[in-house]
Image 1 (cartoon, rainbow, N blue to C red):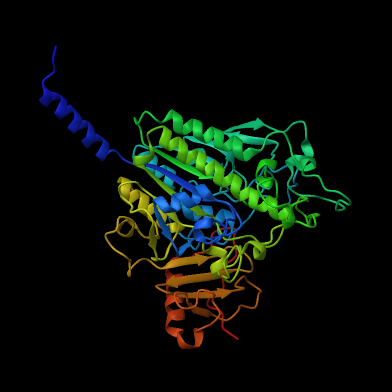
Image 2: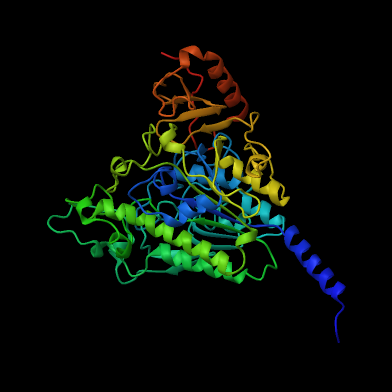
Length: 497
């Protein structure tokens, strides 16, 4: 029977309408200790990151994008809740049992509360399948912070940031089940070296196991994407690779991409594992991560999902200190910014911020609007019609969609905690207010004020000229900061010297 042409046209129009009205898939990629200038699209010259660079040309690159904290677990708490460290459960790196040994990491990181409302929960209630591959870091299975208690349908990876100090772990979590790995080479399961440092020749193979976790995690992630290629249900995929957090344990393939002349002397260890070619190994870890990001993007395209998927790429904090063989000056990892991981200066919290959304985001756009991890939850919830809870971040969709160039009345960007003596920072427009050494019994530093638009390297302290901004920052902290149970209270109102 011949079908009338108008029926075909009507069916085609209905199909197009349904496609246009479908909720977008969401892919959120959060690297570990990746400095903002350690990828090519942000100025890196030595490390190869072709897939991340391509992502930036296909989407927006945000130049003033910040992590939620200067260290791992509190930053991930911000990313998952849209609420800054001043009000979150996890305000610093802290263990449930700080005395546990490396051979028995059972207690895990300080967990978020059962009542904490997370991005996976919000999106699951909005009809999304939710999955996390990689590093969680805010609650072990069996605690109030476990992924399965916060809206995560599929989990594969590490729950514990301390366990992440090895790319050859003794086990990995597959939902709530431990899957044993690397049974034949137990020493490789620990990313630290204890006792005397090795003498003579160093062989990287001595510190490797049978199964490298990064590629394994990526394999499982791609299985999830392929399983959802039927377009029946939108998905939220949070990919949290371990790289480039030390120890230096990339696969040899990626080390061989870099010159041997970079490393005239080996790294013999300083608590972390030794490596014969530390600079090449550090670059290799970033390239290995970039490769797996590329695999993910290619799979989205091959499955016909690319055009209806939002992809966000960022990092949990800035470049780490020069431990474990890292040499941030060699790679110009923070491009001259002040500070590193653990500090609330720009180098510790400014990170890559890339957003791709075909048909919605103009490719190659540079965005100067300041934003940070607390903004991601309210933004994504606004896009898909999910309930955001009570976020303290700001909905960025007017800027993302090109309706506005800036958000002059955005919520203040607040950091409070993050260890390293206790510290706070508040960004108000172009101005940033900072105070350090705020733990009890410490002598607090004086307030600092910087105009980031004119002084991105934070060399010119304007505190004497801007007491009004300090007072405003104190008022914001008075309103929004509360010490979380188990964490010290920050003495931000202490008298200055």
